[in-house]
Image (cartoon, rainbow, N blue to C red; front, side):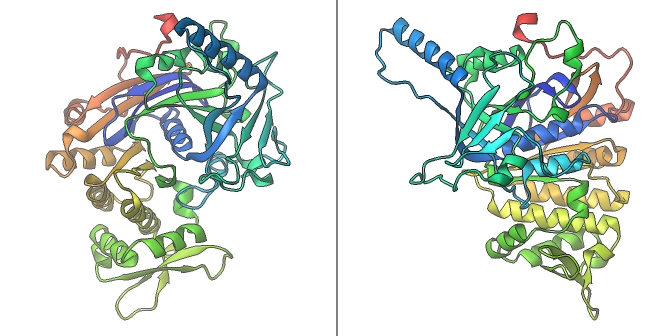
Length: 454
């Protein structure tokens, strides 16, 4: 369960913090208020699941100094100090079978590969990264991500040339040996002993995802990368992170996802058909199948067969039915695979896309039913009144427990992410007397300040 997110220089957000997340989380706000950025940061941290070791000569010198000082103060002896720090790179493919950073770049109209990126693959299948835009002796100006040894149970064969073009971040679990200048000042409180457990730091270095507003601000701290901290009570399984957005709705199923779900999920097709029929009653007697795409190589598409009719590709149905089919197929598979030991994360952007209000309400109820009693945490971002109305009605009739519902009104002011939490049933009260999608003039929202600024 993710509990908190603290942000430094990711996309449009120069600084920000959200906390006290629930099982069901609704991110509300106008355009350009940081909603999508929050989903993307949670996705990139959640999908960081390839074991690796971070090595940097400058970083090692600082870690070595810190460790020796700790040993001297405690009068303990330590013969050797590990030259690396355990970390995680993004998976080669996420739950849907797509490379995480390739998905993120394509969402923003960029190439799925960073052709002239700063990474190279070594003969030992490590990833060497040289960030020339970092000045001086920055601890991350030159570093290496080293895969586990070949005899390690977590070995995946190391990094390859494709990774050099599709990896632009890594994650580190918080430890007391991390030197403070590895992090921006706003994340230093997470190095306190009380905050170490369950905290993960993620660093991203693609230039278009590093907020540049800080460079023009003389008061801004000089940490030139995007970085954020995610605190989790139980770590999300990297293989169980589902991001569903407009591109997932428009694209085909990957062979990796379809074959994995088909082999793993009992009665997968039947469960999709049942759920689809509850959203669209006119499809209540349909049968579904996910088979090879007849016109697009190396991909799969969904087919719907009504009684007495030939199967029809779901892409030939309306956009709403296509949205519901692909999302339900993915979420049903996630539900079957998530467990208390390996919990899941569902990130849903703009559920209102192409949906009629009545179908949208039914779809949200179906999603709530699927997730309610299984170990999956949901983050949904929307600017739709119909979505909020449906959420309130589900909470009022008990289909969505109010104690597990958290809503957050977001707004950006000069790069500062301001948040107003809306707890449980308070969302309904707010909607009765106002519009939580629109920040009120004069609303006092406490901004996120670094410890040094308080």
